[in-house]
Length: 235
Image 1 (cartoon, rainbow, N blue to C red):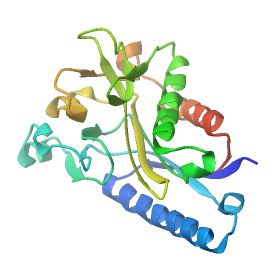
Image 2: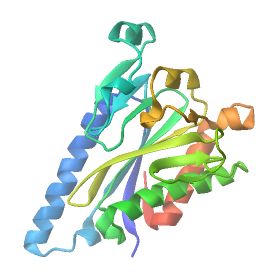
Image 3: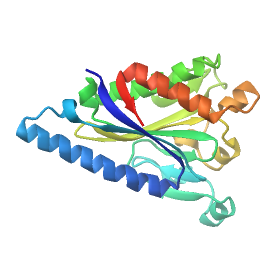
């Protein structure tokens, strides 16, 4: 029986506000899972998991294993760029979120889908790869790096179009991924994205040479995520 998932589009929301909202759902989901394990109830039969889509105002986020020196500008310069800086509890290094970028936060029990953490991350990446195929963009993974890349095997040509960073506890996930659609890529110039100093960042807009409809991309992402996870979508 497909597992139910509630889809919510948070539109444009401050990063900290979205993080706080995630934490509330995440803690409730973990608590319910642990309680049902104690009582022997079938969590999968009654659970309602959450899938959040949003965009953020300009913000740089640093993962728990990241290095602060990958932030290349000062606090004063950040404010001049109308950007903020947040240390998070997700995996990965530093990245940028901003307008024109689709950020996706699945808050689900990945065990209910028969997955471990690695398989879960690979499924998120595969959903992005499948989405990009709709635009005739061939993308792939890069050895020793998360996220989705274009021309990953061509020296000097590899460029990242989507970043992935998650947190799990008791196999419940939060945080997720960010896909550059019409993103202002200049903001990536103020960091070493994901800790890399020798690789570029790109977007759908840059690859196609035109603006891309955000709602169209969201709909395709939803379709591909639903295909890969076989869940029942609610909104």
